[in-house]
Image 1 (cartoon, rainbow, N blue to C red):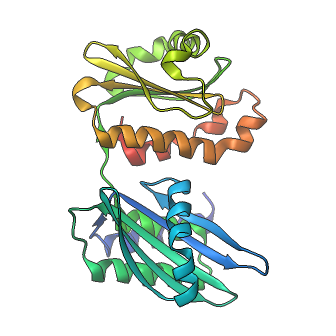
Image 2 (cartoon, helix red, strand yellow):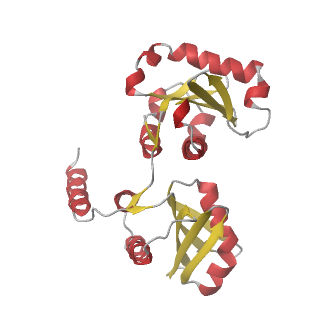
Amino acid sequence: MHYNEINFAIKMTLITKNNQSFIEIIGFGLARIKMLDLNNEIEIIYYKGIDVQKVKSLIAIKQSEILKKKNGILIDLFSNFTVYIHYFSKSHGEIIVIIYFDKKTTILNFSELYNLSKRLTSYISENKNNLEIQHLCNNKIKIPKSNGVLAIYIINSSGHLFFSKINKKKTNLKEYEIQISGFITALSIFSKEIIGKEPQTKLKQINFGDKHFFVNLIDNVIFAFLVQKENITDLTKRYMRLISNEFLENYKEIIAHYSYDLSLFSNFEKTVDQYFIV
């Protein structure tokens, strides 16, 4: 580890110790709207608990109001969720947008949200790097984790395993990783009724008694989750979709030029750990 990395780690540890209180929400998004000559560009800086497309669509819905006022707060209902949007105009024709996403029944602490929004805006104005912004978000925002996922497999449609994570209590599954990958791939080839024919389909559930396999095929990548039956919840299903979307978002270039090097996907374990206790 280089001196600068050590110095950064020490500084972040001190910040963490002095900021132990969490904002507990379902999802969070941080973005900027760049006002260009011909159109506006939405750049996603950070997201957690909701995917990139959800962040973009929420901003797009409110974009005309945001661009008109340039500074303000919006609160709205979407399905069973409440969305809090803070936005601040900055120099160079930019507007910073912070989204807090939670259950409709939850009442959030407004001052906590506003203080965090101001800190994030200040970080961006001071040109803090992405590591510092992510560290602040991870140490101030806490999302619920899902329990009961026994194994996660991400495989390309020809059967090559991109990524897997096995529950520590189910280490025997590691011995059969190749066979399980082959089984899941066979389902995608011979049983389109289970996985689906569309480019993006809903999660398909395969019942194995007290365990269920959830399988999804998106853009020729198969996502499979082995879950203990009693732990199948709406949160678990939502996170399965999030994991799928985030994998494709983070690794679309690598997938397009895949060289069978599994280490290219190893960092995805950090994303999995944000959502699941595996």
